Amino acid sequence: MKKILTPILVLAALVLLWIFRQPIFAALAWISDREAVVTTVQKLGIWGPAVLFVLLVLQVFLAFIPGQALMVACAYLYGFWGGWFISWFSLVAGGEAAFLLARRYGRPFAERWIDTETLSRWDKTAIGQGIVFYTFSLVLPIFPNDAMCYVGGLANITPRRFLLANMFGRGIACLLSSFVGVFGSQIPMWGWALAAVIVLVLCVGWFVNKRYFSIRKGESNVYLC
Image 1: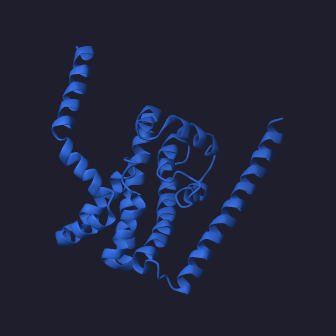
Image 2: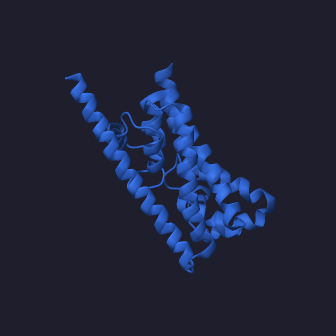
Image 3: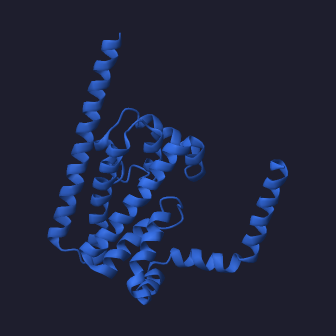
């Protein structure tokens, strides 16, 4: 029965996609257009933050939704701190959902949303890592930020520790995007200076953490020998 049901469901899904192809394409075009999103959200009034919340949570699972553009739009629409809070709360919620679902359903679930090569690569890097590593992984562009939520779910970090890293990391990332949303290309000098300090602290912290982890790993190997 299951062998028959699966092809039927797949066929039904394809038929529905074909029937509703025009509204689907229109929705995809809307999501990728920041100005269109801003205009629509403005018209929604008090429901605007709810729409942005849903979109930002979904972008953790759907790579084609431009998360950075939505974060900038939040600050543009609701000011620095209002936009920061909407972005931060939404991304933390989405990250926690990805983490917990990956922890519950394992690698098969994670591979539905993240390609196997990316998952395997960062799996190895994340072995034995803690709050500091995951905080940096949700901020620095060298990491696939949203994918690291799935990696955390498959790793041995505890849910409480990942939540702290998720809150800190997303908070810093949202600060940077809120600056862009509020000031655009006219960011004041103090804003650039603050952004530079944040990036410098993150880079130094990442280097120190990596060095410390390497030393501990070496000591562990010596001990085992």
